[in-house]
Image 1 (cartoon, rainbow, N blue to C red):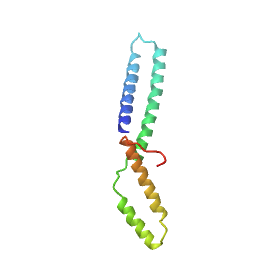
Image 2: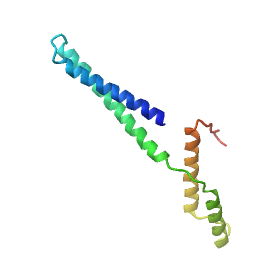
Image 3: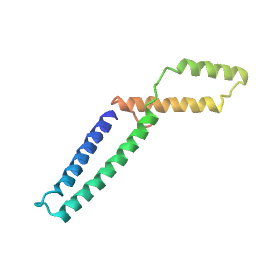
Length: 120
């Protein structure tokens, strides 16, 4: 995901420099003003789209990039304590934390070019 964000940032920098170059053309007589204004408008719209995409990717990165630590022993201890208290039940909070932990692990596998098999 970091590679995609870096590529988009370089694309945004390139578009910003194109816009500033187009704006500097207005000082010269050889450029047609309406054509130049239209190209500035198109570049500005493209820049806004890339910036929106970058913001969306940064949001996903903040959600996914959480440091992962080994929790299997913690979950095992928690489940054993809950089973001793009321046999046959595990609290909802434990299940939700286990699901969240599994999602983080799946995201980490995807980020490291791992292959997740559907349905397994």
